[in-house]
Image 1: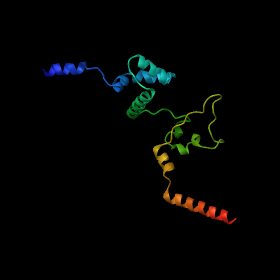
Image 2: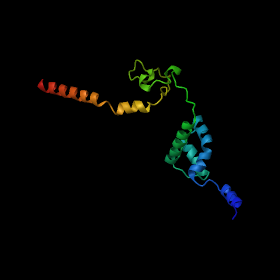
Image 3: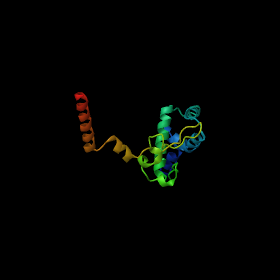
Image 4: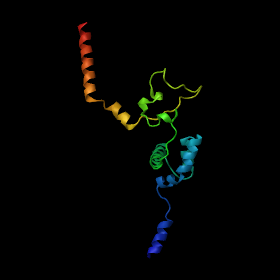
Length: 151
């Protein structure tokens, strides 16, 4: 078999994996999801078209697709609340406050405005507090417990 025949046969191969077939459809699937079509309806349509997927598998492929395309795009979506908070961590933004007084007003009859998830650094700070600060807190709580026992 010559090299040109081999190349022609390779080019003639169809996408055989579910992921490859779904990858071709992802731009139109993303558009439909943005329009408000439910993921279950899309999965059912894919099943009727011969692409057997569970909803969990579909969501996994969708997550992977979005992660790859988010890394490739340099454009970031507009953050609600203006551009002055775009580079500020979520803990310092006004919409990240816990108190009801400083929370952004909710739209009438609708869900509250979505906010950006906390950054990795913010999550790391919350999940792994400073050991010295943690020791101070533990000592304080122990003192309070001893004082309470004395009363």
